[in-house]
Length: 96
Image 1 (cartoon, helix red, strand yellow):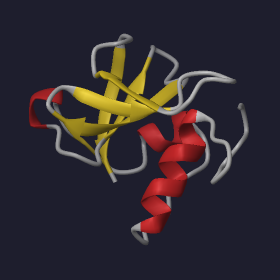
Image 2: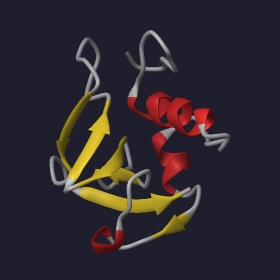
Image 3: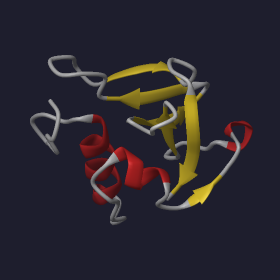
Image 4: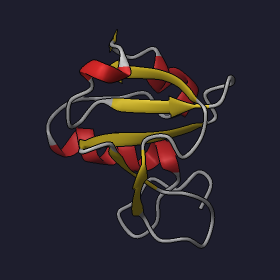
């Protein structure tokens, strides 16, 4: 759900903000801001917890979990799920 920041419902950036918040790390609210909230790393060096933003406008974000997978909130009404890191064109990988 767009604008939802959990824990009962999430949009993509709300899920990232909530998850990192549980670890004591503050993140900005939007995927565009999250793309710039840390150190950029190449996908080949991604580690679990890194943020993967998608599309040229950074309009979607997921969390790298390892093994070529991310966890993300895909779209309104869909459950949070794991998918290939290559599900959409990658904009950036950021380590908060």
